[in-house]
Image (cartoon, rainbow over all chains, first blue to last red; front, side):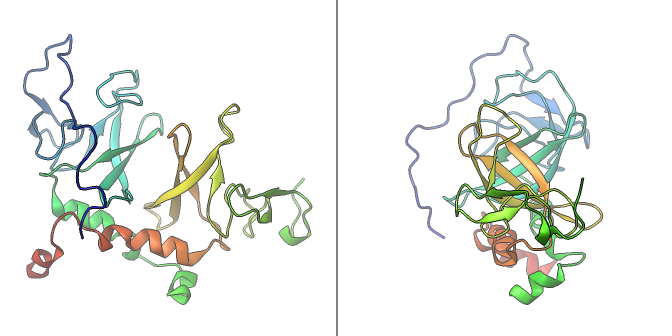
Length: 132
Length: 113
């Protein structure tokens, strides 16, 4: 499907240097995978490409490190922006905060597809079947 | 005090998008916070925002219940709320299939698995 806005107005920039020097990789809290910060398709990698787990460190702006929680955030559902971009909705296990993040180019496609099919897995509500 | 029959309840609110007047009590007896017709909500948790919240996705709990995720159009806050029995099922299913309609990767490769 063609993108409705093929060229973004402002290209994504990498964040400025952080005071704590994190190196070039972080370790996932879910599956302990070493993940490089460089991600294809996005300048803000914030979740593990293998298990999609994230950490509650950012506030409203990606990379601002405003959240004090530091809890583990698990992928809750998928949302689609009007331009066709998939967003992962993360929910924090410690404080129940929700956040939406774009998928990266190297995210595990099987896990993403399982999450997209989750509404149709166990039991579709009866009235939903009648509406179809 | 909760009234057993929600259709006899006089406690109503008006949808900020479609203007439908709905009771604050869902058929299951739970309090309702979004319009059953267009599924839009209002950001009442933040007292000085009070802006419109649009439904963006469906989350499925471990027990199989569906939750509706709203995003505030003014402050981008996200909330999740349980769906009620008289919600518009067409919009719910349309939101559930939307990721599969616009996949970022070809789905044909999964046929071999």
